[in-house]
Amino acid sequence: MRRSLALALALLLASCAPRPQATPAPQAPLVQQQPQERNRLVGLTPQDLVGRFGAPALQVREGTSLKLQFRGRSCVLDAYLYPQAGNGTMRVTHVDARTPSGIDSDQAACIAALETPS
Image (tube, rainbow, N blue to C red; front, side):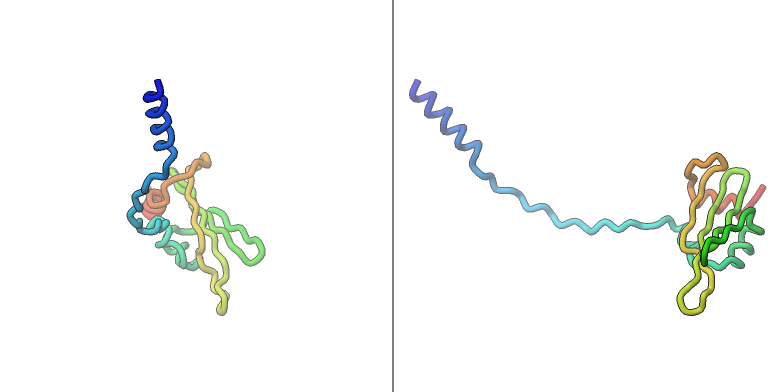
């Protein structure tokens, strides 16, 4: 009995002892990349957008910002423009794409659909 008690106590103490931990391999930092299509529109002027997609279906001014909305059969694209420091030129800073019912849509597919309307 003493022997089994001593063995049980030794196992209990061994389970509490610190274990050496393996050093995790360094990982590359996570870089969040924006879709390439969004980058194609960021920085464009209102004239660039009109030349690419035609006249916007909606223009909304709020303060110094401008939202241009382009609509197709399968998607709606909102481009948000703000004046650039220094020269005040309006440029796209953000783009959203969604279906006509309001569900998020793939931006690349929406841009392609608006560039080549059927």
